[in-house]
Length: 381
Length: 149
Image 1: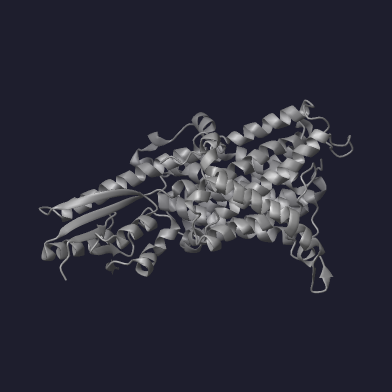
Image 2 (image 1 turned 90 degrees about the vertical axis):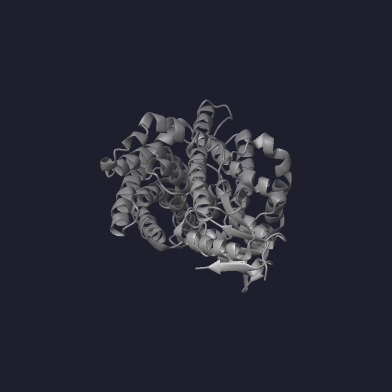
């Protein structure tokens, strides 16, 4: 079963889907969003923007969801399918380009706090899932998958963990449905909560980077709060937090696999367990290397001044790259919406859902509380 | 009513055994052909959102792992079918794709005189949406359908 989607090989068949995505985003940004800022609703000019906080990011995701679940009746037509699949690559390509927001100094400033927070939350969440999953009487494999899915990075962590803990397909399927369902909810409510609590970009980025489970959803929630892409904006903070979390995937997979096999010593099948070195090679996310490469080029001044706080203004090249990023993310998030399948999410349930909701909500709320507690120690770039 | 071809969905589970027993009995009484059906779920790459930038082996490694599990289930289904139909002339059909779509094609094919399946078939390894497979077939099948608990 090959799910690989090589960009150039797939490009011709992807054109119709990509065209629809591009057209959707062009209409949203050039007509719908400007109309929303001037439309008078309930006697208030720009009510849709001021009260609902809708922007091109949320509209793009909503349109993607509508295409799949309403317009096309639950399944993307074959002619559009490859284009929507390829759009996923845009999110990660955009994250690679986000590396141009930071120099290594800025990463160290932001990242030191992120390591502390993310590390603490990953460990705490794993312990919570192992304990609570056992309490609920869940299968040991299912607990292992849920532990990493809820602690690190949603789908990637769930699928990366499953072979090591002998998870059945149904375990992974229900874990994915649970975390995606929870993630979609948090993706839409977080901007409202952030604005209601008058969080700064720094506080908001740190919160959702810690509390939301999935990379794409972290990105969407950050851009929904503040659609600008520049140093110090919500997306620049949230993505550093997110990348710190993604980097921990091989380590968490190793830890949970050790836990799983420790409870299976009587079966003598521990030989299936992989070493940390192998896991690092196999599970390390490729896009993080691209991101670090971009940070390196930016630190070397390859694109001119970055426009950090207190420094020279951003160069024209950097400004242009940031504009591209807003479009790339916009396209990618229409595609993300197109892969939210209500049919799959509706059928999720039972103990995995209970476990996911309890741990997910606890993590989400606790992250907000912790960000409030440490807000004076958060460093802006 | 005389049947020429009965199709039964099997997945190696207890639920499909009951449907299989019923289909075998029906085929013996009608002296007609019996086709066993298993579908390897091809919807996983989309479901997990596979792409090459994630990591070298995280997602593709998982797809290989799941494919192996499904092959084992297909073997279990084939054995279950062959054991139940010993001495009969039968065909075991192994398909790939979205189970709901593939089964709907079978349920609407002119060559299918009756399609027999358990309401719980393919849930042993399936995605959450497969819970509503029986309901979808009941709504959309144009040929006779026999749904067992």
